[in-house]
Image (cartoon, rainbow, N blue to C red):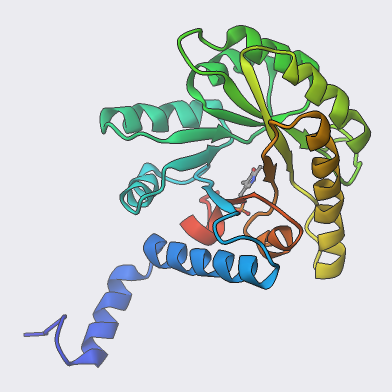
Length: 252
Ligand SMILES: *Cc1c(COP(=O)(O)O)cnc(C)c1O
């Protein structure tokens, strides 16, 4: 008989490798990520715990959300309304309490559904969308937490307002009673050179600190993903959004 728990490490490793080969070890990933966040906070003079983690479950199967929930994850990021509705139905069935963040492209015909079930919308980039979310937020729910998405590269086709337009949109959101302006979000182009990558994050952080003087309720600088979150933390991110580094590769 093979002792899977015993001293025969060669067999034990072989078997556990077999079982684990196609299963992401979310617990181990989470532990590693938290250590990297702590280390990065310390290295950059950031207060311990000043960076929060938003696990991004878009494209991932419900089993992985279940594992994450068991590990204490209580915030999740999703990019597609239909997929999020299915996952939230499951979560409700199991009596899970999570805060769901919408981080995907926003179309007018999706705002009603989004306003009804999400706690945060991080990808607001037009006054028209903000007005609809405000109008459609159900009266029995607290105001919807909102971030303005900024397009740092200035590339046309990419989501987000330009840096110049961010203040006007913030002012619009601030005037809407059913929305709560929380901060800025960006997805800067991925750049291999870390120095250049950090410049984009620094630019957004500068704008964030400038805007906070006019909008003191802003407390969230959401920037940094699997490939660049350490650069984002170094430049002042308060929330990093991690998908694949935590949950494994998204199925196509
Ligand atoms: C998919 C996505 C993420 C997570 O990306 P990873 O590279 O998997 O970490 C973060 N933010 C937004 C807006 C996304 O769409």
